[in-house]
Every structure is written in structure tokens, then in C-alpha cells.
Length: 327
Image (cartoon, rainbow, N blue to C red; front, side, top):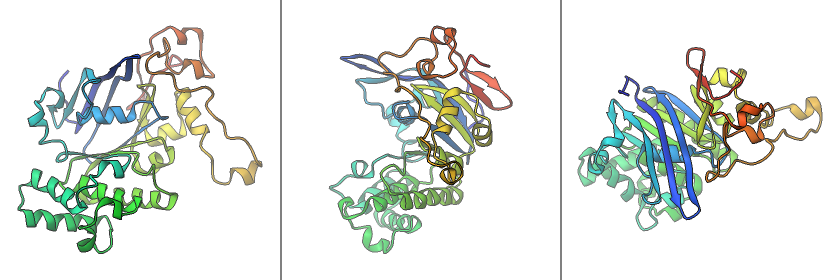
């Protein structure tokens, strides 16, 4: 397999964790592409492999127990997995940045936010200490933190959750990355702040022309932000396509079930009080995945062969793909 002209090309990626309980197949044969300036959503329930996919791309899988067992990751035509760690450090935080789920654990409590942002800038942009500090203030201003000249000297514990998330966004964008991975960037925030964060990320995306990988379990966030969608379940991508196709005409039973479980505005006034449609059962253990289709034990449309036959991704239309025996 050779790289194409896409910004990011992930091919047959598999990541496993070898533990006392056995081997957890966290990511299993995942393939997708991203173009420059594009926003791609990766959605699925907790434990579906979304975050491990992102950590594999930026090579932050802790070894042991984790390791990438198969696949290639091309970024701007370069194979990231073939690089030495020292060479890859020129990419991580510089060309590829990540906003992690919980800013309080991602930020170092012993250093001011200004020190943490300016350190990254000095490392990758070859600026002086003063220039890096000034750029840190400029980035805090861009993420709409009031009085950035004063707040740059604050420690993380002196800031609210929303402010810390803004600091993470400022740090991630401080070196003008080509790809920003946003891993559940609104999970720990209240609804009002969530909307502000999404608006801010999209505004800065346009300003910096950054491609965004939006990892979330919230289909509403994907509908609002992404152009392409990858739906993950139990370590595999089960459906891919553009946002309009996925939301208007989902093909995989899991995608349809996800969309049916979302509460719709005005639904109660039109149809009265009704129970939300849940997806029966639970996500399978990564140590003991079902044979055949991983979704088969929960699928309302499962056929006998779904439980035994290995299902491959099949093309649908120009860009769509689905992992289902029904097609």
C-alpha cells in the first residue's frame, strides 16, 4: 500500500492490549482517509475504539501493554509508524495536535498555563522565550479568555472547566497544525459551554484551515460540525459516508439504532410521552468479541450467518462503505 494525496490515510490499523485477562482487540482493521481542511466525525458508544484510534495515530499507545499490531498511517505522504520516535516528535504537537477528554488531567498542575503553551511553541516554532510568551497570550485571546495577559500566569486549578478546555484548544492550535484531533472536547462541560466550545473550534478551524477529527458519542455534534462520518462499534468501523447520507439514509443497523436513540425536539408535544428507543444489550468485551459481525448479538436484523461469517466493508455509492451482510 502506498500513500495517496490525502492529508491522512489510515490503512488496516489494529491496536491490541496484552493483559493478564487476555488480549483486548481495541482497534481492529480500521481504514479511513481525511482531506486538508475537512472535518471528519468518529462516533460510537464508549468502548468502541474511538480514542484508541486517535492515540494510535499520534503514537501515544503505552507499551506495554498496548501495541499497534498491523496497519499503516500516512500523513502528508509520510508513514508515521515507520518513523523513529525522535523524528515523529516533529509531527506530534506541531503538525498533528490533540485536545484530550479531560483538561484537568492533561494540563500539568505544577506549571502556569502560559508556561505550558509557550513551552510547546518554543519546541516547535524556534521562537525566543519572550516571543513564545507573547504568542501564548495571543492564543488565549483567540480562544476568548478574558484578560489573557493576567490569566496566562494562572495555574490550571485557578480556572473553571470551560476555561481549561479553552487553554487546551489554545495549546493545540498554537503551532498551526494541519490536523487537530478533538477527543470528546465537550464531555465534561455543561450544555451552554458545550455549544460555545463547538462554535469556537469551528471558528478557529476556518482561521487556521485545520482539518479536524471530531471524536464523540454525540451524533448532534457530528451533524453540526462534520462533512464525513465514521461509525465505530467494538473496535471496527461499521459504516462510512458523508453526513447527509448517514443521517438521511443510514445503512448499518447499528447506525440506525444510534440515530433512533436520540431525543428529537418537539417529539413529546407531537406524540406524547414515549420511552426512548435504546439499543438492547451491551457493547461486547474486547477480550471476547463475538464471531462474525460484532453487532450481531444486539442486531434486530441479524441472520444466522451474521454470527459466524466474517463481514468485510462493502462500497456504497461514491464514498460510502458499510460492514453488513444485508448489502
